[in-house]
Image 1 (cartoon, rainbow, N blue to C red):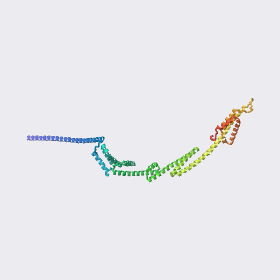
Image 2 (cartoon, rainbow, N blue to C red; image 1 turned 45 degrees about the vertical axis):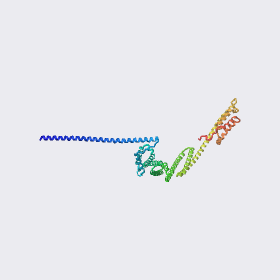
Image 3 (cartoon, helix red, strand yellow; image 1 turned 180 degrees about the horizontal axis):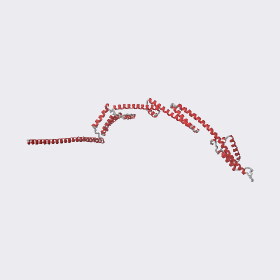
Image 4 (cartoon, one colour; image 1 turned 180 degrees about the vertical axis):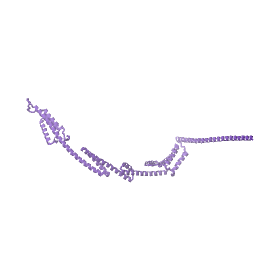
Length: 444
C-alpha cells in the first residue's frame, strides 16, 4: 500500500514537471512572436517613411528638370509646353470657384486673411516660368483677393474708413481687364457706400465741433477748418457764423487793447510824446473801424465811440501842448532878454578898457591926458568885443528897453570905428557870426 502511494506521488510529480516544461516552451514562443510582430511593424513604418521621402525627392527632381527645361527652351527659342502641376491647378480652381460664387465670398477679416494666405502659398509653390505664362490670371486673382482683404477689414475709426476708402479707390483705378464683373460691381457699390458714410461722419463731426466752438468760443479756427471742406448748406451757414464770431472776438480784443493803450498814453508827462502816440493810436483805431464795418461787426458802434474819444484826447493834448509851448516861449524870451543885457554889460566893460587905453596913449610928460589917442589896438579890441557880445544878438527879438540899450552900445562902437578898416571887418563879421535865437535858450 505504501509502495503504491509512493508510485502515485512520483507519477504526479512527473506530470507537473511535464506541464511546467510545456508552459515554458509556450511562453517562449509567444515572446518570440511578439518580438517578430514589433520588428515587422518597424520595418513597415520605415518603408512607408522611405517611400514618402522618395516621392518628395522625385517631385523635386521633376520640378528642377521642368525648370531647367523651361530655361533652356527660352535660351534656344523653343516653346516647350509646361503645364501647371495638378495640385496647384486644383488650388487655383478652388479660388476661382469661390470668386464665382458670391455666397462663398469671405464674410470677415479672418476669412479674407485665410484666402489671402491660401493664394500666397499657392503662388509660392508655382514655378516662376508658369507664373510668367499665367500672369494675367495671377494678376486677376491677386487683385480679387486684395479686394476681399481690404473690404473685410475692421473699421472702428474714421481714420480706418478713410484709409480703406483710399485703398479701394486705388484698387478701382488699377482694375485688370479680366476682373470678374461681379467683383467690379461690388467694389463700386462698397466704395460709394463707404464714401457716403465717411462724408456723413465728417459732416456730423464738423457740425458738432462747430456748434461747440460757437457756444464756448474755443477752438473756432479748428472748427472753421473742419467745416471748410463740407459742402452742405448747414455747414456753410455754421462756418459763416463762426467766421463772423472769430472776427468779432478779434475786434473786441483789439478794442480792449486800444482802450488800455489810451489810458497808458494819457499818463505820460511828455506832451510831444503823448501826441505822437495818440496819432498812432488814432490810425490803428480808424483801420479797426474800417475792418469792423466791412465785417458787419457788432463792435462797430463801440469802435466809433473810441475814435471820438481819442479825437477829443488828441485835441485836448494839442491845446495842452500849445499852452505849455506858450509858457516855455515866454520863459525863453525872458531868458533871452537877460542874456542880451549880460552881453551888453560885457561889451561895455571891454569898451571901457579900450577907452582907458586910448586915454593912456594921450598922456603928456606930466601924466596929464591931453587928448585920447585911439590906435589900432583899441579899435581891434572894440571889434572883438562887438563880435563876441553884440553881433550874436538878434535885435528883432529884444523888448523895447533892451533894444534901446543894445542900439546905444552898438552905435557908440560903430561910430568909434568910423573911417577905419576895422569897421569894415566888423561888417564882414556880421555875415558869419551866428545869431542866437529864443529856441537856443533854456527855459528857467
